[in-house]
Length: 281
Ligand code: PAF
Image 1 (cartoon, helix red, strand yellow):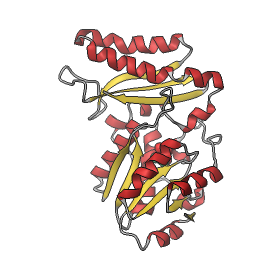
Image 2: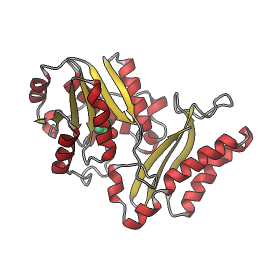
Image 3: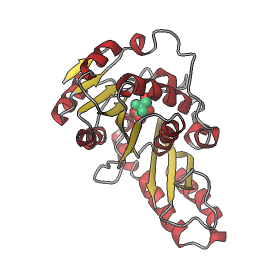
């Protein structure tokens, strides 16, 4: 696996290739990331991953400084997965000047849910992904693979690619889960062993909410989200949202929107760790 730290090194490594398949990450890789690399491999003539902890997508009080950086283990996993090129820019390589030119996604999609609780998050994500796309796929186009675990992020990136007519196919990877059902996430590493046991209550709450929503009459549905949040609160969580939305635009469903076109999304804090998850139904 070739490791490129600068954009020039990356472009040189990719020069012989016509269709890179790209998996952007912030490192601290787990089986979910590695599944995305395996998914990417047959989709291009060279497989590229990136590791960059993007300061722009963290609020000042969030975990940018403490975000786990596990370089040696990440490289070993990427090598074993058959990744050909790792792009690992330092901050000065990707942001040589303060990044004052930013990508502002549609507020209707990006200022709700995660964007409501983490203002500016999707500006930071869209800006770095646009820049990573320019570095990795800018001369050829190609394919990029994003996990469905970050459901809203995937939708924002799809819309960005579509509205800027970028020659990039966005492919979605299914969420990988531990045996008890907890979605794999780098932030699971922050959980104490007691919290780790409790954490499965989040996917269970989403499953229960989806099941109840699907079997309720429309007039009963309004109360279900508040009840689901209250049940998590009673277990010691601080939920931001547990909500049923349309898959097409993440807006609340109308009477015409039926299971099959819906997704239930949740974000909740357990101790100091904020977890997100979702389930299509
Ligand atoms: O999902 C992530 O790990 C990040 O948001 C991404 C897409 C790599 C951008 O920093």
